Length: 249
Length: 249
Image 1 (tube, chains in turn red, orange):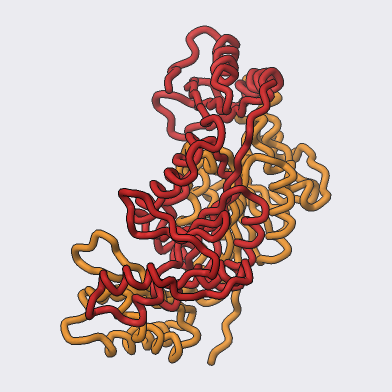
Image 2: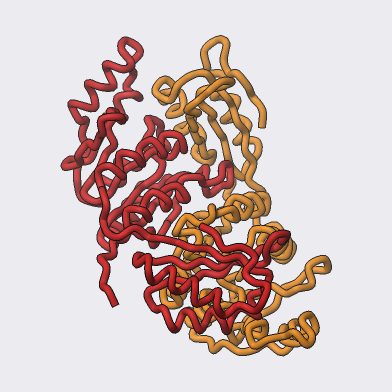
């Protein structure tokens, strides 16, 4: 068994608009898909309302437990944007206006600049501003906590900064899928055999409710490509004649 | 100030397929939208991997803190379906085959019934089976924890059972929206005034990144319809000429 380094991540989604069902959450799936090729595993997600103490408590706890924490939401200039203040509270760091950020904001808004706009220059003391060549507007990072905006288009843009700054943390996760017409009740003993034989491969089973082309999708995931392929092949060898239906990706 | 009863809820989303980004989460937004007309506020969401001890820990904690807990995922017959066992562990309740559920499963699968299928008859001791006239396949409830499947179509179906069994817990949440061409930096002082004047109304501000018809959407939420309307109207009265752009629900 090859021991691989495991880097872990957690996400904190902040905002009443998500928990009230006003809008659907769209950022987690792209975050996970950016992290996995870097060898980073998203292990926990928490969604909370716009309450400073609640956010601070989560940030403190997640930051201490996971290698990387990404927050989504609450970084604008209005009363319901309390993420920066909460992250400050989490680390007992005072919030202050960052001169570089303030200059950028004043430059951007010119004579239309308001006190509200200048709130976006606030960062916890000790935070750093992360940029890349293509994304020059800074992203605030406080220790292992990255503060990303909740607006999906900007979240995606900032993920590029995160990816470039993090680099490869470990072997990328690879995944293979097999599609069958069998139901989970019949698949169970076959899957149990594969799970026992390949302890380093994660095996998932996902039934489709209104199926046309297949009934159950099986996935094989891991950081050791040869093991993952071997598990997939061993599973396919156990299937009855006529299966699998598809065998791609 | 009218005091309204506040019922709270939390959701626990279970499954490696969500955290690995294989599929996007689709159930939370519909859960929130079912709960709010019942006067129930979804206050916290946690997403975890398919690990019994992790799930059990969350179930115990959420169940003690919120009036209602809804879990999504992990109730099928394969090795990665561990929610029932985890809920049992959370409440120190042994997992046993429920005679009624077992009979239904045997009746459904007939001679094709496997040990795998029969795993779906397992419930924590003390759990009850919830049904409605239109959804006769039972949903497992353990105290204030409802175990719903993760497959979106079935999750939606089961939400009907939840809604019918819960009934109205308090005044429904109402929401009004106002759309403007102003940016958040300019809106901030106006919003601060409304927030101070209407402590029982929740005011949200949501910028649109690629805007055509509007730049910022403002929302006014609460359980007292007259207060919510008054806050919305007071905000509109503060807007400069030519605003708002739209003024609908």
